[in-house]
Amino acid sequence: MKKFVLLTAFLIALCSKGQVGINTTNPQGAFHIDGNKDNPATGIPTALQQANDFVVTPTGSVGLGTVSPNSSAILDISSGSKGLLLPRLSLQNLTDGATVPSPANGLVVYNTNSAITGGLGLYYNNGTPSAPNWFKMASVNDIPTFNTYVLSAMQEFSTANTSDGSYTYDQIVGNCPTGNTRYYVPSTTVFNPVYTITFDKKSVNADKYFLLSLDYRFEFTSINNIVPLKSHWVEYDLELILNGAVIRTFNSDFNISVGGNIQVGLSKLFTANLTGTTLLNTNNILQVRIKPTQSLIKENSGTANGNYATGNSHLLDIKVKDVSFQLFEK
Image 1: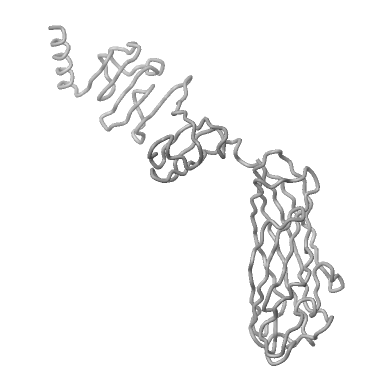
Image 2: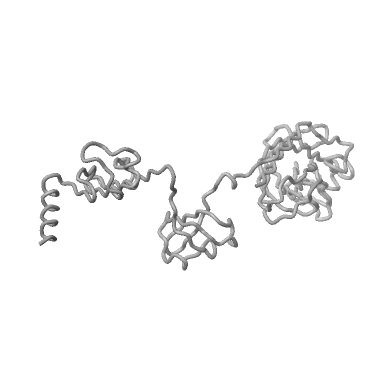
C-alpha cells in the first residue's frame, strides 16, 4: 500500500509540473536530487545548498553542484573544494589499443605509467578506435623555456680567405671536358664550415631543439665581369654540424637569371630536434657548412671553362651575412 501511495504521488508530481524531485519538494529542473535534503521549500537554493545537488534540465544539460547548468554544456560541474577525477590507467605506449579496447577519438584518461614517452599525465586519443594515437595534454611544466643566442655582427669572407668561404675554379670544377653543359663538384673538394656558433646547455632535461635563421650569399667571379648569357641553376647541400657530427642535411638550389648579377642572396629558417642528442655542459659547437654539388655556371657548352678562367683563379665566395640561433629546452 505504501509503495502504491508513493508511486501515485510521483505520477501526480510528474503530470502537474513535469518535474521530479528526490529529497526536495522544490525541484529546479526536469530531474533534481537534493543529496543533503537541505534545499528550501520555495525559491532557489543557496550556493552552499546546491553543492550537493544533481540536476537535469529539460534541454538535457546536467548540473553537479549547481541547479542552473550552462545551456552550452552537456555537463556543468561546480565546486569550491573538490576536483574532477578522471579514470586512471596504465598506458603501455602511445599507440596502446589494448588497455582501453577500441578507444574513441577524443577519449581522455590519466596515464599512471611513467615509462612511456611523455610520462605521467592526461592523454587523449587523437587517432581512431582501431589505431589509437595518445597525445599528452601539455601543462605549464611541459612548455619549453628558451635561451636565445643572437649573433648580430655581420660576418663575411673575403676572397683572400680561401680556407673558409672562397674557392678557386680547380677546387670547385675540377676537370670539366669540352662540350659538357654541367659542372660536377669533385668528391675531393673540401668545404669548410662558413659559420660557427658556441653555446652552453641550460637544462639537464633531454628534450630540446633549436631554431636557426640563416642569411647567406653565393658570389661568382667571371672573366671581365661578364654576366650570364643564359639562365643557370646551382644545386647545393647545407649541413648543420653539432660537435663534429652532421645532424641535419638540407638539399636546395637556386637560379641565376639571364644577364643578371651573379650574386645570389638566400635566407632559410631551420629546426632540429636534439632529443636524444648528448650536449656538453659548455662550449657546444654548431657549424654551418654549404657545399655546392653540381651545375655551377658554365657559360658556353662548347668550351671547357665557359667564361671562367681555369686553374687557381678565384671562382666562388660563400658568405654568411647574419645568423640567429635559439635553443629551446624543457
